[in-house]
Length: 364
Image (cartoon, rainbow, N blue to C red; front, side, top):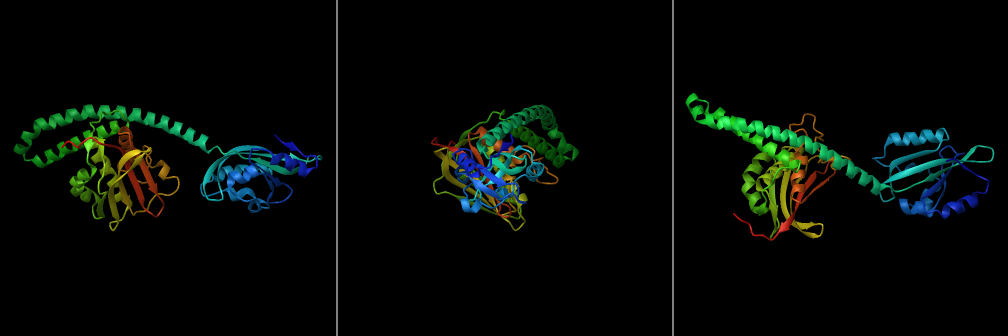
């Protein structure tokens, strides 16, 4: 609510200085509303020194992902000399971002004129992250239910198609359409596998985990990976003594192929793709990861965080409707692992599936 000022600015500042909430005071009588006071809590929150703050408009807290509509709302509230409460993404002196629950209120003098604007800040980054995690959980649950229903219907239909094609296979040779029949059967089986992957994404499909040597698996897949990469240069890189993981081999291979497809589509024909198996840790426990790296266009701010969302894609005409990374993420989560995505615009991407290591011997 609006504050009143009795003329003793020093006393007012003394009160603000003892406040634990980050607070600034700006001069409303000057055109650019420069900051004339900032308490220590504000300096601690933002990382700026007092000399870096005083005399400046607080727009220095804005950054590349600050919502311009939110800034416009703040500007309009100041113009109308009205209080405003709003959440806005701000940036510290070191470049790190934080969500700021900002309250700005006018301070009036005895004549009813606005002399200052009081700005209270509150770092609500953790609360925003918790809200986003809850929202994402609900969204994934809804999409998972949809995927489960679709996959069950597809599975039932495809069982009929595959069964009919298998029964008709001996007749294909007689009719001279053996190649077409084989293609139809292959396509139907591929579709059935896709339905199984949809169930895995929804965490409903039963997996068949076995101790898996990732290096051996990748080496066996090398011809297929090279064909998938097409003209791109594909390189394999392994740790000297990589750990093993308990994984469903078929789902792991499908997930790896999906990552290589993504890398291929992000690079030019002269691009490079690296498939790397290395040891690491997962929440402090031994782990093994397989990482697909490319030197393509990469992903800019805001895209990395959404890359594994169902149906999210930056492609104009997606063949897989943005489900590739979502399905990979579903398989990794069901395998008690973690999907890690690192990327910058113009600097390629690195996508890793990290799994808990197992000491169980590999069964061939």
